[in-house]
Length: 504
Ligand code: NAD
Image (cartoon, rainbow, N blue to C red; front, top):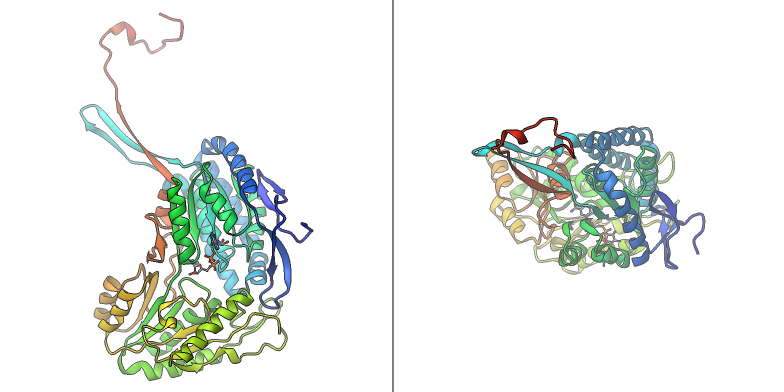
């Protein structure tokens, strides 16, 4: 049964109980305590949301883009006023530190800033006289009802990658947030309603696979944006496209950090620490494999162990928390990450910093593991090939940049990659040739801001048009091309500028 702590759906502008008897707990990962329950919606709730969105669509489609943009300006102000509150909510249900949460809310706010420019972004092209007396133009139309399915690791930011763009393009949007972290999405939705968004334009349903599959197969939904693991991204892409929908599906990652012998070590170690262990490694752009080139390896590993070992790990949910790193998302994920550390040890790698030793005295029920570094990893070991999604950094030592590049070629993922170097030629070779869609040169986390697309390759992305920026606008719109020719009247008497019906 639903109670006061049960998440509601947002359908037709109303907060409504889900029609289900299946619920999951939402936990505070710092303590393991249940803080809410989330309903597992199915076909019925999804259909209710789609019908409300279909009803809202014609009026919203015809709302002038500058008016849609003005709602974004109000939404933006509200997000800024409530940033700290929202960041605390993100921390409570996800576990990242308050500063990390705040930065993630800021990244989301930037998507609203981008979307407020929609009148300019939606403009089409026009060419006078493409043929004698013929003019051609293109106009961008919204698709209709579109949906977004999001992961646990950025409860506020990843949904905001999607719906401000989709909505300002004139679509109605249905969000299915991660069932692990539904609370931030609900808090932000309150602000969107307060900003004056008409009812039915934005809806929220909750749940797991059953809810996702209902969205993937519903004939009223024209397009789906997905962010999550590769296995589910592939399923979403295949099922959604088989049901005639446009799909963009971002998946998992294994982001190589290549350190050249000439790298400037102080900022390099700081960048690597931030990249590998920020947000407890639960980032799709986290540096998740270190590749030192040549004889710099010993120093990199030693200095990184010192920097990572000094990180304060603990509860993030207390108002005065001063820790550098929080817990993982669930007990199951904690066990999975610990399993990777054990596997690396079994397979013969050198565990130089073991986060399994960590104890957080004031939170025995929290899902904690400390920063972990595994040296002398071989490329075929599971920690080198698979996404761990935790604070575990495997180190594969190589002799040359060519060897480092070859590791990237063999990797199934191609989200991001980073090179630390002072050599222009090495950086240039890397940025043009390393097998990854997002490249950092002396930048530990090259995650694109709102004005650039999130360009994963290989198993890190399924689809054509990426999330964010102009590609996002293209994804949420369809173009119409119009050719026009006007004939000079042959009979003068039809050329009457004040012709009225009934007048002959
Ligand atoms: P996940 O794939 O388990 O879940 C993502 C969404 O899919 C959730 O809303 C969930 O309810 C739903 N889902 C889960 N299993 C499903 C199934 N079998 N069928 C249909 N839907 C299902 O991912 P997660 O654990 O929440 O998030 C972590 C993953 O997301 C990592 O792999 C990370 O790399 C990836 N990620 C990628 C990007 C990117 O831009 N490429 C960004 C953030 C996170």
